[in-house]
Image (cartoon, rainbow, N blue to C red; front, side, top):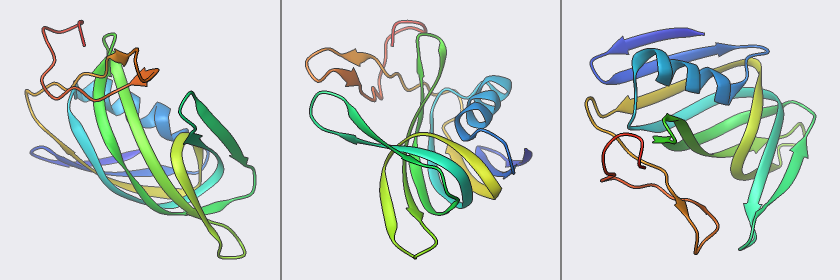
Length: 147
């Protein structure tokens, strides 16, 4: 992974074989990032798993052929003291059909370019919302470790 940083903004280049979530979480840990927005991402994923929230859980769809990453957006928060990413992606296949949804995981194909804006000194939480059955973004969490 190559990283360019200017103040609170990061531009990342991930190379073939890198796991998208692992790479972003590693950056968050090393830079102590606890609040951010993934503004955009493009590139290619050699493998991806998308989810559709059916009201109870994410119904997964596995993509095992390479797909162009035509859009990537999301948020970076903290849950249980660790980086927590919520990402959505649009992916185009060899027939130019676009599929999208909640990105559950993905491995970079040729490369991926990602633009991330952080909020220095800020902290977003991602506590479990029991009524919805999933973690939700909390922009004003309590003390560290409780969000």
